[in-house]
Length: 197
Image (cartoon, one colour):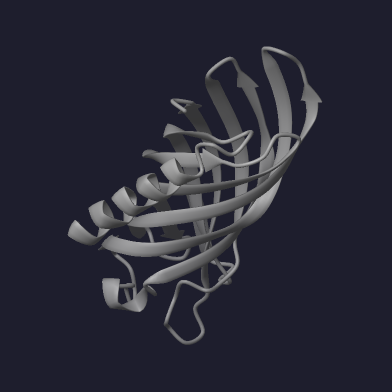
């Protein structure tokens, strides 16, 4: 937790140094995520789960921009084995996410604009919770890697001091350490930010 606070303070202090750059924006961000864990096993049914996230964002540039973020994110999902009655595997993974989005404004009005964006996201997993019922060879916390890489793309709009982003994230690496069992995470997010600078 101390490392998280220190990283956030460093990010804010560094952002203040950029405050004189034209097109610089900084603020808090909250949102909802809808995530799904997928496997390479045909007998496993995957179900999407929703949760909330929060953090901060910065934006540098006007027409073309760079938007780094620092987010506390949760990824939840449910796996069910179709061959075993009542089998469930509920995964809850909390992480520090650092997306780095590259975007462009496609419509720029005085009080509002519309944007498109894409970029990588690094996720450092800080907690894992796995609950299994009637599951053969259940997955446990040690079977999940501590880092995840993804690719995000989407669109957004700014109205006055509010900024709204809609994104889809594709998990790029296998979260599972188990041999013969692939586990990836895909996620849809909706985020609302408030420009305080």
